[in-house]
Image 1 (cartoon, rainbow, N blue to C red):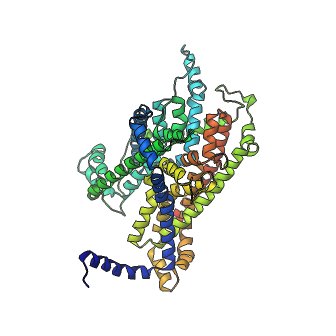
Image 2 (spheres, helix red, strand yellow):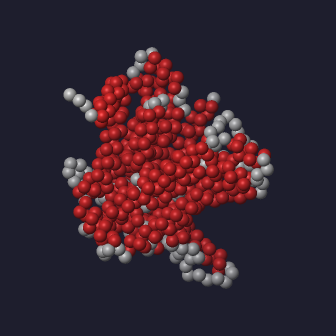
Image 3 (spheres, rainbow, N blue to C red):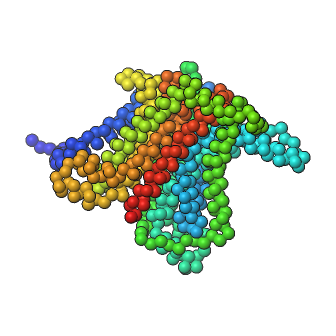
Length: 581
């Protein structure tokens, strides 16, 4: 009997693989089985089933979008989406990068504000924030517009509406950009922390000014991080549903995420065109991701590693106060002003820009917290889902990160699987879930279970990153000592690693919980009257004109999120002090 070369190669691989598989402990096999099963069920299955069963609809949908009845509206929708995403990403890159550089490299260090800045989007969930801005800058009833009209009257200028209109392309771009800033800030700030400041200082000592040093040294060194932040801004801009759903509807501006939602909300649902647009979004994101990876490979030699040296902070002189002012302005714009607007409207019987203190009431809070069945059910559902999703995600990703912390290959593979959902726009996940889980053998559409699975896959990347950070802070010698003492993998994890990583895992749990409770995209696509959640109820109330109730419910969610984010900051700071000591 003779063997061909491919058969010999295959046999050799099997021979090498068997000893490796045999060495895996039952605990390791269990972790891999759960992670791979989740990825297969919640990513591959929905996307694959949607394509297989809807193939004929996809062909028909493509024809309708290119030459049929939808072909006239599509170019405008795509152009609107490009303007919003490019404009918002540009705003986020400028503000996020500038604030990150100022915090890491200048004497305008933001201190506590630097910690708070990336969390602003968590403190005030985007859907609550954008509604807050709508009640401030509505051209007729906006509270700020009313104030400005009063000021202009003092100079003889009488306006019936305005002077600002949040329901416009400019408003859409600016508000989307404000909620994209934290993503850019986090990526650029982390890259600057890894970059040895000695090289920048050498440039300055050689006579280059701060601006020349930034352009010639700093920017080239963090080019991969800037590319990553642009991609992240693009994905978050495309996925962001709450801003175009609230502001775009008022301005009659359609973007892809809302357009796809409307196609699926119509009767009969137009699944073919919706799926074609969702696939198009996914392809664009994957092409950009490929381009980013190519750029990172080329730019690896520009990333300079270093530690143990703290460079001299760049003195900004009078510009220091300008930088601090921009940071304060950002926090005020994303947190303080929207909350103030929501509070004033939530205390009124009906929304009016003229505040009458004698009619202010807490009735709207009583209505959403105790009297209205839908809001009460939505609050309970969102809290239960947030608790379940955060707990399961942190248990799984925490166990993986801690168990594989010193196994580079396993860690990379696990990071790839848990990072995959971040490259898929939430709109695509929503469409795929509707099509895949509306038929046997997993007919769960319309139930709370489908929301649970959608939230689980949408937030697993956040959980994995938090778990990895917690695992990296623990020395390898502790787990090695435990294994030398013949302790099993499970016992090492439970008795040694988990207690040490608990503060970081708790912080991650809170982050996932807040994201889940404030999530809007999956909520809009997948929730209904039998499984209401906060994001969908807020949008429905807004569309039906129940503005004071919307404001009250948004404030309730903000208070819950703020409490948990404050707890996260407290735990993180305590953990940091404990590590330093």
